Image 1 (tube, helix red, strand yellow):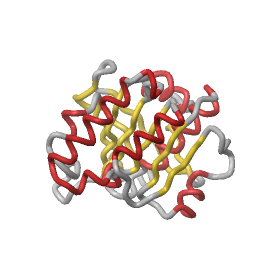
Image 2: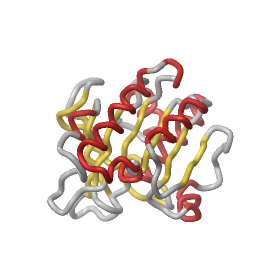
Image 3: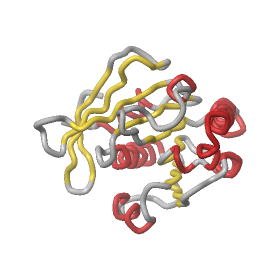
Image 4: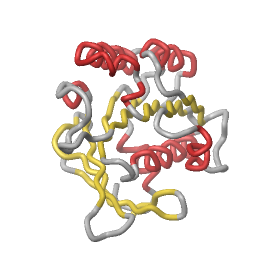
Length: 206
């Protein structure tokens, strides 16, 4: 992801079908805004559908993040505090989207049931992303970090996805953050990274 047309780059290189990536970062770093920008880029460049599960922001605030330049027929939003994994799967099978964003993984009801529940949910998502009946979507799981700077939840989580992305604020560069694929990535070479900045309510590549 090396140029300003970051949305197209994410589409071409960062969202292969039948793939599940985990975006992990601290509160307010830019995970949601980047996921929204990438999703909008997919709808604009491919005219394929996006299914966005929003569990982080009140719906009105999320709509402000989203902006007014989206096609509601392509960018489908479902807002809820908690969702059973089966309900998420039902929506995906119905829509057959190019990309599924779960923001955040803590909204999956099984997440609160400990390691066994989380593993059950992730195994279901692995099945979902590989099933032709679902459209074999790319699935982005967004997660907060705990006080120790690690992904919230079981240590199994990074091992059950295809790529782990770290989203980190850049020290001494206000409003800038880095999107970094470090070690875990089944889609290509590592490490890979890009720098983005918050600008006019969205994010842009720098």
